[in-house]
Length: 266
Image 1 (cartoon, rainbow, N blue to C red):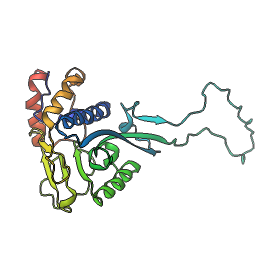
Image 2: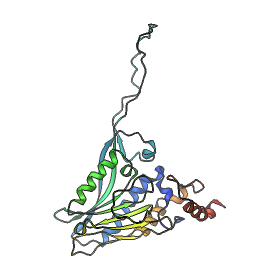
Image 3: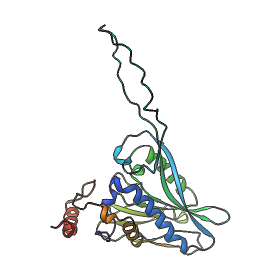
Image 4: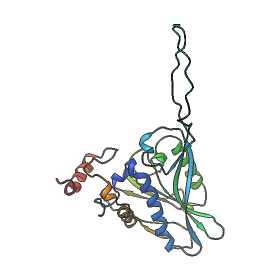
């Protein structure tokens, strides 16, 4: 069955679904772009890797295939017996504690490259919770973003997460929960921004190439619908549960309740 929402489905923002959805959508976008490219270009699915010692369990739920944990000590190894506790009042007390362990996190993104030279023409990013929340993930992404914006490479940035602080964009008039930024290198600092609400279908957007080349168009709603059906999210999402955080506005909540009433039996 198709998604009950006309555009982005906010239930996919839940940590249990987001990682697999992120990967599936990026690959599907690459598949949508590839047939439209001339023989001068190709699309690569790339991986960004960084270490984090943050312990935000909510972010890490559902992504066992996207993280590589540092080697842990063998839990079956015999424990070293603790020193015998004395009754001397001034003796320090021994206690067992835990230390934060570094976690290697991998995030997928796309690059459109020129055939032969392998020059990166455009980078396509789908923001993750780690990119948007304060910490190592956001710092790593913002550093890369600055490098791209200061180069001749185009940037296409999709933000399909309502939570956390959006990436810096100047002159934004609307406070839409979802955004797609198209930053062409030759037009900077100007860029094109699609602001998308829950009630709107996801737009089709272009992928900038060299100035003399026709730009491929990504029909994002059609791509999203294919991902939703192939992943069988209709049987995995419990629409009787509330929309994942952040909390919806009162108007959006009323709209969602009316939209899902047939599914909930209301």
